[in-house]
Length: 280
Ligand code: GLP
Image 1: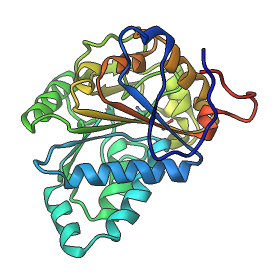
Image 2 (image 1 turned 90 degrees about the vertical axis):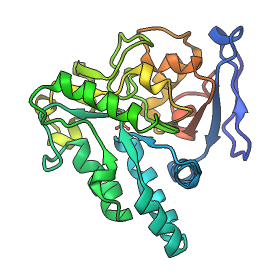
Image 3 (image 1 turned 135 degrees about the vertical axis):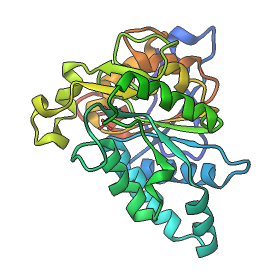
Image 4 (image 1 turned 120 degrees about the vertical axis):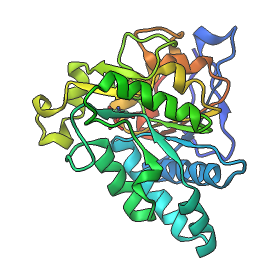
């Protein structure tokens, strides 16, 4: 194993991970000191992807990790010339990773309401351009299929933004999960409902038990992936990710097989106060 200290660097540095020595993981880690610095870099990557031509849909994520990212994006966009802002609004096309079954845009705690609050309102983007699975669909399995087709019809995702669940999920691809999983309806783990309770009055029992998620196979089809991990609570799962060979018990570990994954992590996730320097 090798150890590294957390530094601010312009250039991402390659982190060799034991299990992938032979296969050369596509994950490149950029370690930055603070959540604000992570958010700014992630927002810059998103804005750059939005302005690229030919335009490709963005893949977006929700969760506490992403709130500062969208706030930083709003600030960046407001600094751009008005004509550029207009182009951005006019051509915006994004697909979120997941939504709870049973919740719609008007439901507190839904990812649709979160996206309206964090992205649509501050950036002036019409909600029709910010796609999410319809959690209120009468047939969630059919809706999952429709959503997967809609993503493909839109040309597939260029840049995919990802958070990391405490149990190693990406989107709502709960363990165990293989790399061939498609966009589908899933049951949520008790630990995930516990982790996401803050949006539901701190009561895990009120967190929906099912969700529609973009599958790992679809996530791995994105041209580029930006994985954002912040906070000391994520340190154990991040460490597992960097050491684990691709395996079903840690769904995020399939990202090692993608050729272009940038991991943006803050000092707390890489070197939490109670560790004496994590050994990577
Ligand atoms: C949630 C979502 C993911 C998110 C992840 C991390 O449950 N399904 O899309 O990226 O788990 O969430 P957080 O940033 O709140 O820790």
